Image (cartoon, rainbow, N blue to C red):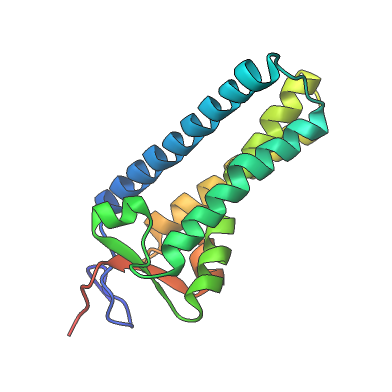
Length: 181
């Protein structure tokens, strides 16, 4: 297997294609978070006429249920049905191919892919409430950065371009519609 070719005949996308897809997906997520911020500001300023204070646990739950889980669901929906590509992947000409159920694979793949982001949230929120002095804040930060690096190095360093989420989901990212004949 050379030049990004795989046993299945799929052609591995270039590093530039993967980075382009990542950039557009990042823009998509930023758009979602900006929309979430606007809705919260309207709710607090207009409807409630006050800003609420939250406990450490409430902040963790709000972060999980308003940003991390919805993003996992949105990306799993985009990658779990035709054209099997997130917003960024579609703009980069790449998509996800699954060896099993696309829906199950997309959920597994995106849960693993966004786990470093969630662990980063947990570390930051814990640090804000405890002045970054707790072992849990450092643990979540270390796990977040460690898993992030593992995923990046796997995707860029493996011959087939698969990261941990792809291996567990039996998926592979490849050029849109291009196969070896």
